[in-house]
Length: 75
Image 1: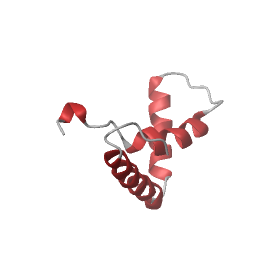
Image 2 (image 1 turned 135 degrees about the vertical axis):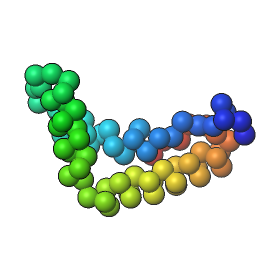
Image 3 (image 1 turned 120 degrees about the vertical axis):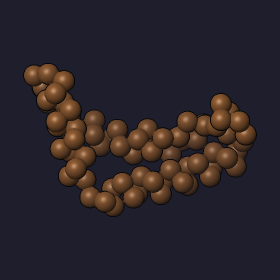
């Protein structure tokens, strides 16, 4: 499989952005620096297990994707 043919399955696509979006929902920020600060603060507050679970899910999803010939895989 060529690099261009490989599926795009980043852990952030399905593990990180949902909870982060929920955390940021309804909040208002004065500028981009405030948003960046809040995102970094939230990321630092997540336990190691949060990130480990995302990587483990990516491995399962990647395997499933490879087994069906590289097609997009839902959770």
